[in-house]
Length: 121
Image (tube, rainbow, N blue to C red):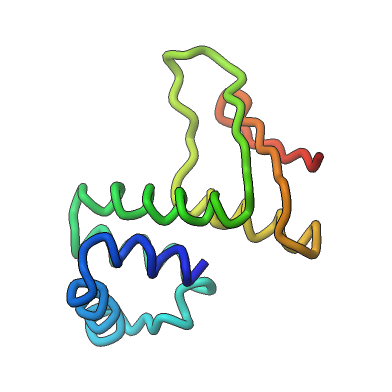
């Protein structure tokens, strides 16, 4: 996860990445190593730093994390209904899936009308 965050922050530049980690640690008391255990606090801190732009950073982190765990998603439900998948829920799903499989591998996540079901293939 930390490598995914590094990649997302790096899209803003090396100086911005360093500044973000410094700001997270000094203002929010979240060290880089603490982020996987404090995902909700990390997400809240990003929102305070970037406002609505935090969602774009979280999407980038999810994209890089998704590449690392090789996930696919299938939305089962009406096209007009947006799934209730937040950054924190996504990270928790990936954590549970990786613990369950005891390795990083192929994981298929099916979202059904806001309810999340995980299926290993």
